[in-house]
Every structure is written in structure tokens, then in C-alpha cells.
Image (cartoon, rainbow, N blue to C red):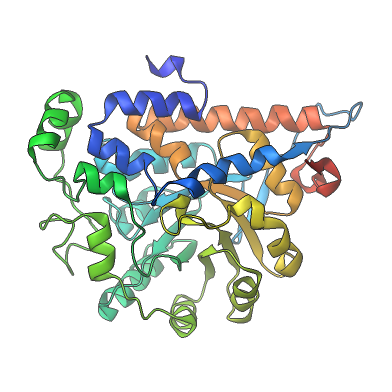
Length: 382
């Protein structure tokens, strides 16, 4: 299977599985407990049908939207995800360049493998930084200040990760950052020589934005669950979020909002956006899917804050359904991580191109000229 054979997210998932050692692939693909919520994140879109209009004169389509203070060329962007240079040696650099080419937002994680300053210096399109609140308050403060200096457009505070979800696939494979050599993983690394040679002989793997504060994850191998449970602050609360917003002073998003009450509280503390998200099903298995929860959150706060539907996106039609409910934009992680793992920047560009093409074609088939025309009249629930 080659890059040219990949026409959708599932194709890239198949190719990523061939290209990656087992522990690394299963880190991307896995979720918490029985992985029911991960599956539901995509299945939720199937419970809702689009109702198209015809004879609408759709020669010219405007897919742009304004979210978190920046206009983006299509209503879909790349959620921040950790450890990207483990998936392909280009890592965040390749993802960022692909997002820039398509004129959309891209985010890097606190656990990124490329520095805040480099991304700020080299990428002109909208940039988000995902902040995890560590027990080390000096580290939290330093990360926000570095984002200011690097002129990032938005900080997204992740609010659903006070402890790690039960990621059983990682327990079975022994996945860690940096990767540990075990009898079972050694076989997988040996049978994926291209990945292994890239990991061993290209730029040294590190958590670039954390390495000067903590050795865990860069020089001390930990599972992601152990990192979260050891390093992140379970005392994080609404006052913490307010303090980050005040220090940052710019576009401020809460990532992981799932209830109407929390959405209203986000408005009250001055957040300018929320990502309706369950962390890709990697935290609380059995929780609601973002699309299932979207309508009641939009009805409660959609006129006062940007509401983003994050997770489960696999098709352009999923984006149109979420926008019809009232989301300003959609975002996702696995949809581009599979492509990154399969083919680096070229893979990310290809999946973005395919999804952009689906959004444009489906808008024409829906009979709408701009995303602003999408509304719940376009939808019927089964």
C-alpha cells in the first residue's frame, strides 16, 4: 500500500499500522477501557442525516470561518497532540507546514517534540498551544510566557486530564516516552527498520518544551499514564483556569468541556472558545460523544463563545453536520496522526486535501454557498 492508495482516514490508518512498530501504532489508535467512547465519537454522526437542497447555484463555495480570532480557509483544524516525532521524524514540523499550506489552525501540545519558539518563528498560519497544568507552577508560567513571546494565537487549557485514563493497549504493549526496549517491543522495532533507523539516527527525541524543567519523558522513560499521574496537577480548578486566562490575555480556549454547566462557567471566566471533547475517548470511557452533546451546549452558549466540535471526525460530511448544529469549526487528532505516521508531511497534506475536497463537494451537494448557511434545517435525526 502506497500514499497514492490512501483516499480517506481509514486508508491512512491501515498504512500507519504497516509503518509503525506495534507499541507506537497502538498508542495512537488506542483509547480508555473498552474503547466504547472512542467508537461512539464517530458513530454519533451516523444517527443524523443531511437533507440537501438543489438548484442553488453553487459554482462558488466559501468554506472559510473565523474561530478564536483568526479566519481559517476551511472549518476544520488539527488538534494539538503529543509526541509527534515518535510517529514520523518530521513530527510537528511536517504537521505545521501542512496546516499552513491549507490555511488552517494547528496546535502543539505541552508534550510536543518541537519547540514553541521554532513553531512561532517558522509558521505564519494560526497556532494554538495546548497547556497541561503541571504541579510545577514555574513550568506552567514559563510555558505561557514563551507562547506570548512566540506570538501564538491561542492557548487551549486541557481540562479533562487531571489523571490519566486507563489506556489498556499501552499497558499491554509497554509503550513509553521515550520508547523502552523490551523483548516484545524489540521484535516490533526490528521488523520496522525504517522507523527504527529514523528514531536512532535522526534528531534526538525529546519533549522540547519540558526538558529544561523535568527529565521525565525525555531522559527518563515513562508511560504517558505515569507521566500524567506523576506530573500533572489534580488540584486544577476554575481558579487555575482564570489565572491562566489572566496571564495569557489573549484568545483562550478550554479543551474538554462536555456539560452545559461547564460551558456556561467557561463564558463566565472569560474564555473565548471551548472544544467540546472527550480527549478522543482516551480518558473517561462511557462518556458522551462530542457530536451527541453539541446541540445542548450550542443552545446554551453558542451566541457568546466559539464552540468547536473536537473528535471523531473522519469525513467532510461529519464537519457539515457539526456546523449545521452550530459549531464554529471542527477539529481532530487521529485523522491526521495516521497520515503523519504513514507518510509525514506529504501524508498530512493528502488527508487535508481529501477532507477539504469532501467539504467543498458536500457543500455543493447540500446546496449551500458558505458555511454560514448551514443550520439545523439541514438535519434530521433518526
